[in-house]
Every structure is written in structure tokens, then in C-alpha cells.
Amino acid sequence: MARIALVTGGCRSGKSAYAQQMAESLPPPRLYVATCPVTDEEMQRRIEQHRRARHDRGWETIEEQLDLTGVLRRHGQHNVLLVDCVTLWVNNLMYHAEHEPEARQVTETDVAAQCGPLLEAAQARRGTVILVTNEVGLGVVPENAQARRYRDLVGRVNQIIAARASGHGLRTSVIQFINSDASVGEIAAARATATIEIYQTGLGFVPPADGPRFARHRAAAEAGLRQAAEVLASGQFALVILDEVCVAVARGLIEEHQVTELLTQASPMTCLVLTGRDATPALIALADTVTEMRCLKHGLQAGRVAQEGVER
Image 1 (tube, rainbow, N blue to C red):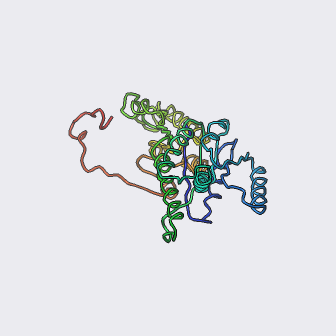
Image 2 (image 1 turned 90 degrees about the vertical axis):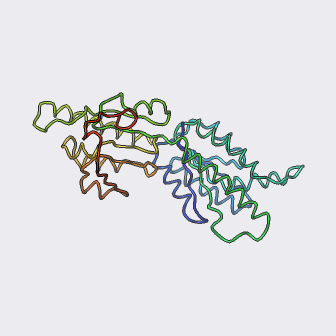
Image 3 (image 1 turned 120 degrees about the horizontal axis):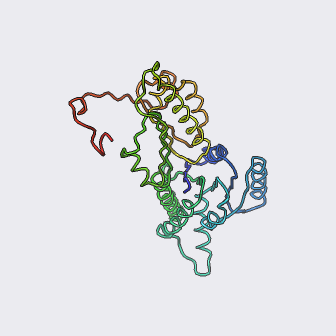
């Protein structure tokens, strides 16, 4: 199941360059799908110039103005497929519909019907599909009906793709550095969900550092780091959670620098979450968002056992 990413922004905002950078951070092979129609010789020269530049960076390029679904289905061998851009695709659909023998106007229902198979084909692939589009609706209202209809159609397509990209098909990997109980609820939930994988490398509660079992826990934490590195290198996960890794550092199972070095391997497209108590200042400094949870009252302190679906 592929990961779907939607990159949006205003005209000349750098969104295409950002999407290409994002794609090049992932393992090849890569396919660039250009939807821009060739309108004149100048446009043809620009297209050839961009094609040569991408080829030098390990890209294969094809041009397709209408049948994006077919492209996604026919080119399943590529790990990354970048469509630039959705906005021109909508323009092409409008143009061809209005220049058919029986000219007609494309409606929001029409573009929604086109998006369904497109997104299904994207999800059926492996790897990552990146779609570039233009932000609409933030500027002045277009002065003519045709332009307003185009704005509405692009807006509708953006909504459909964004909903799928954010809510479906985003793969998650969880590496548990401490927990070893395979009967807990999150393991059962992951088994029932195709997009979540959990790796338990921990051995449970950490013994004192001078205890005979501490070396085994250190080796288990090192295995967790190796598993996390493998997950990040795959480029297949939108969210990677290093569960209780802060505790592993605080208790001396792994070194802080090992974790910071691991974080530098993450793709810009991957969201990394580190959990656990006693995060070090260096890990806090690297994070964009830091939350400290404090227990005010807990049933376990009153002798209540852990409840299925709540604590376990």
C-alpha cells in the first residue's frame, strides 16, 4: 500500500522543487509524471530542459495530460511517483471535454469520479505517490464564470486528495524499546490494521545497571535502534514512533548520541515521535513539539489492576 502525499502552495511558491526534494530523499527508482501540455516551441524547450535535468538526478520522465490512473497502474515498478501537477490535469480535463464533438462542461461530480480511481490506483502501488497542486481560493475572486468554475473544480479535487492523503494509507511503524507484553491492546489493534506495524524489542521493566540481567536489556535496546534504522531507511512509513526511547537513554540502555544520529537519517516526509520520561536536553532541543505529562492521580496507586483497553 503506497503512501500518498499532497504538496500544495501558491503560484511560484517552490512547491514543485519541494516535492522533488522530498522524492529524492526516498530510494529510487523514481518516475516524474508531467501533465503540462505543449502549447508552443518555448514550452517544448523548457520541458526538454527540465527533463534533462531530472534525468541527471536519476529520474525517468513521462508526459500524460489526462490518464493519470493508467500511468499509476502501468508503472508499478517505481518506488516513487511524482505527479506535477494536479492543477494542470484539471485544466486538461476541462479543455478536452469542451473540445469534443459533443462539447460539454466538466462538473465537480465529474472530477470527483476521476479522483476515485486515481487514488485507488495510488494506494494499490508500493512506495510513495506525491501529487503537486496549486492552492486556490486565497486570492481575488476570478472575474469570469469559466475561471470561477476552474477554481471550484481544482478546489474540489484538492479536498478529495487531501482527505485520502491525510486519513488513509499512511503507514506507521512503532518500535517499542521497553515493553515486551504481546497481549496488550496496541498489539491486537496493529494486527487488525494493515497500515500499522509494531516491533517489540524491549524485555520489560529495566533492572538496576549493576544487575546480572542489565546487559540483556542493553542488547535488546541496541536491537531496537537497528530496527528503527531499517524502518527509516525503507522510506515506507509516514509516522515512526520510538516508544519509550527516552527511558532507554535515561536508564543507560543506549547512548543519547545514538538516538540523535538516528534522527538525522529520517526523510523529510517522515514524522518521528519519541516517547518516554526523562528526555535529555539534547533530544528536547531537536524536537519541534515537546509535551510533558504529569500524573495527578492513578488507579494503580489505589491497588486497582490494569484494565484491558485502558492501561493494557
